[in-house]
Length: 469
Length: 66
Image 1 (tube, chains in turn yellow, red):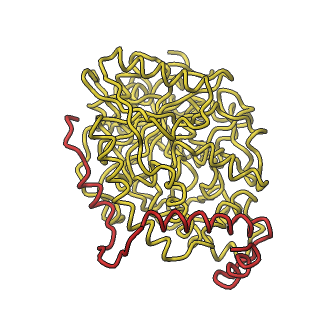
Image 2: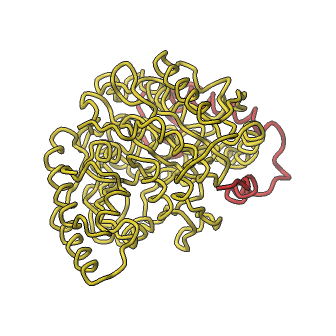
Image 3: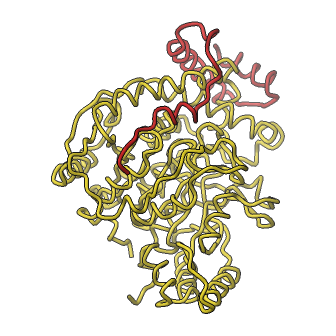
């Protein structure tokens, strides 16, 4: 292979481990690609070629001495610029934190580094992870690698753009209402929002403690499973991270068989406002699952007309607490849409916030009982409209913006409130030539099942093989 | 709630200034969220335990083959 950046994450790791390719060669290819693509994609906020090459040289030296390779040895990654590294600037995509230097490192970054991964830099993102399109008034909009006139999806915009653009092999995003799955969907990637308590958030900028999730965006299902297997699990520094054992996700992707599996599709809610081309692609994916031996069942999903309000009653006050002092003292330093999306938290009474917490297990239980009594996984669009252009979605704080935002997150936001794992999977291309995606949702801690089902589909559909280059 | 009251309450509670458009948006949102939460809660919560979401998720986890 002449262009090393076209490899998958697993292929790249294997190539370095077998010393078929050096970590330096791999890194030089990624740095060169990053420098070439940055003017088009604007996916990086900061890029550290010298630091990454030094890390790569250390990997090559260790391998030359016979040291065992980790599962991500020598593989260049980059992450949303809200994962803290002690002593390194983490802007959170904002003007307010543009010079912030944390004194601690995120647990997930430590785990990736321990697995041998290299860190290329900080990726563009929606300001403070607020915004489903990926716009950023301070650092410039990020652009979709399949068509730079279109949005990347947000808020993990740079994660979607850089991995989709074959600049890095994988990236972490964060997902409070869809911010991993939306850029995955828009950029033709696989994106995992795990069970709410599956991954540590220590050292990660918060937006809503009850709804924030950390997870990977990658080109293939197996790549994603490998990264997720490394970052998932209990963390003494984050007591909200579950002690549930972590399954072998990558093993679940190998020779995946779904004969006899039952897949639920929604009778209500998820296709409200869906376009014909998205419906057609979703139906094609379901036909593929049937060919693979799965059975499709239709279910009525409960409570969904209430979930937007329940989520805002939870996310609003949690976000407002984090931002209140800055909203009071320096409101001019927020982008217009970000400020407008944080303001609702100022108006939610404490009683409503607590109610949203107290009823959450009951609402989730009702969904689990209804859907997973009938099926093993739930299938729905990730976004039920084609990926919009930057011009169409750049509504700032106009009166239209709540509806435009709500349309983009219609299918992802309910799953955050329910706390369930959801995997976004590429599902072809809509009439405008941009990627489409479905999400697979499972019972709590059923990430391995989602990876197995997605891997079986991917092996037949081959959408992950396609590159925008 | 009218938007003027909302603007005054946000200033009183939070010390944050919001414009007329935001006040109108928040007033509408407050009404919608209030109705939904009243309908969902529906009964006294006096005898409930504090929600522990991870414990609830663990209880709901399946025992699949993966």
